[in-house]
Length: 356
Image (cartoon, rainbow, N blue to C red):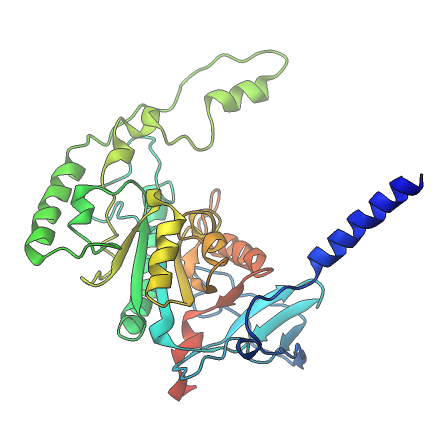
């Protein structure tokens, strides 16, 4: 019995020691953060600039904390917020960062139903936000919110970057700058022609919805959804080869030659190494979709937040919105959930420090 108690005590000690904060930085690289929370009285709603795309966030208890990121020679002001159940409210946090140590990344700006040739297959195919109408709404959000933001930031930050699905392919490799190659003007012109040929080569036709199927007497609900799911994006409804084309950056974005493309299939490590090599410490994250790709793909915040100071630009993203005509409530919900462990900002809160 004594031996058993000793083993249990030893395990508890190991757990307690491992739970203690550990910092590998030298003493001159760290500071003590005073987590002083000052109550804000009657603050305006958050993310209220584009209510068509995201429902403004309102919370009874709001606090302000001291500055968190405070770069030497900072030239960019980023106010941010997060939610804490333990603090029982929203905490707003100012930040001062160096723009030349910052990258703006847009997750999955798929060029679909935008006139470039890649389009939703008929009569029942799905891609991106899953219907042509919803894709067009997302395109308008890109034009009205994200593209103006990228234009404003491009001359200040180190990089504007886009992540797209698929392997590294010869068309996009010569259409966009990537981690290790910047194509010539002639290469880009030829790549645009090759892209159009590939996108126009598909029929964009799949099967129609099933008109009948067999159900068991005991479990008809299970049988029903097995044969008629809510989201099927394979060859049956999208047609063969739909996902094998080089998906372009949406035409709703004004892409510059120095903007960098991220190929998802290469994985996170090459992206991390590229950013670290370029001295990037801060990420302003935009793009689609808040509940899926924005968090879980190569350039999603679940990866980036392990190695960089990440700010989710809450009104520069849209969540998928099945069974709804508007994405605003879904986007609100998913940004709110992300705020438990990530900092949220908004387009109007990101500005030159001199105007702050």
